[in-house]
Picture 1 (tube, rainbow, N blue to C red):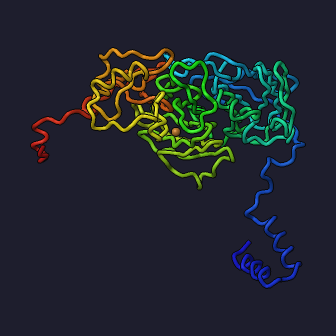
Picture 2: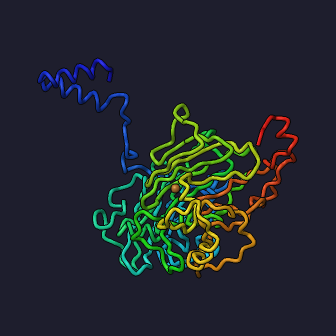
Picture 3: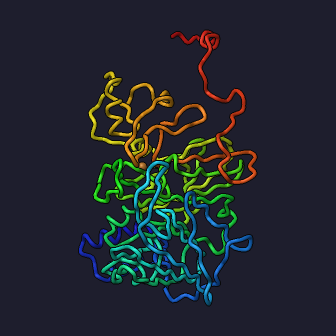
Length: 444
Ligand SMILES: [Cu+2]
């Protein structure tokens, strides 16, 4: 539709133009070049394509830090999955365990992985004590498979097993989650990732390392047995695949490898700007579609809103330990409380010890000693995690929560955690010498 056509249509409407003109214009808008032929994957009645298996002739499975893919069977040309919702013990990070809800024994880190064109059948068993349902987020499917409890199906009662079945007519990064009492059930952990690989990937869609991370946020009071799903704003455990740093597995890659990281966000209330150090990356896809190459844009931080996925890709051409984390600073803390007065500038010596008996690892914010805490003996509340106690190669790390480390190495014998990066001599920031200060005219 050209600009003058639009103007003509507008003028016609303003002047009470003929019905014929309007209907012609409306028709032009429907079929014009800016409109795709389908926004829902097209007709449902498509012939499924043969199942594809992982391997050199099939797809390269995604890597799920702290999690894993659901196994499947192929039955008469259909890929069959089975997920079970139940309550389970979950460790967010060493020292912090609660009862959560999850799928197949995992909290937030269960991944369904399939290939474009496949017919899939997913059995969902409910071993919770309450009804549930599963919504397949971002996927094109028959309305009755959409998993909206009460609207498109009846709830799955405790003890029941439901069956969802459809043909995948798209590929990309998607998610799944409970759609029954959603606020409670997502907050208790009933979320997962759903990856669909392209059937015939283009050369630029092939990567060496393909990670998937699902974000969530929790309210876990120190000592609590279960998360509190009623919390609306003050979340204190922020997770990738159900784990908070230092409990997050690193993303290990070899120098020069092409990397994709699939980011999904099913937090209750917060969007997360995810920042990667050391590289720029390109946003190559959303849960809407692959982004054409000409429209991909470079970033070092990408905002993943609640309910969105973003695929980022880059070549890991710089070795080192590069952190990737939410850039909202309160989201890289563990069990941070926010209802304390601002104590910047006071002498916390007598004060901190008393608070530490109630709040694990407490120290007044903004005071020195963050890295000097290693030798201190601090009482902690049972089943809680200290805010700033993770050992690092130089000092304790002052970070937790939605935080992980991309470890890029020139040499790798396996993709297990290679430990801390060994920096080439002369490449680490350190204290300036008196000679250097003098040479450069820095007066102190
Ligand atoms: Cu965040």
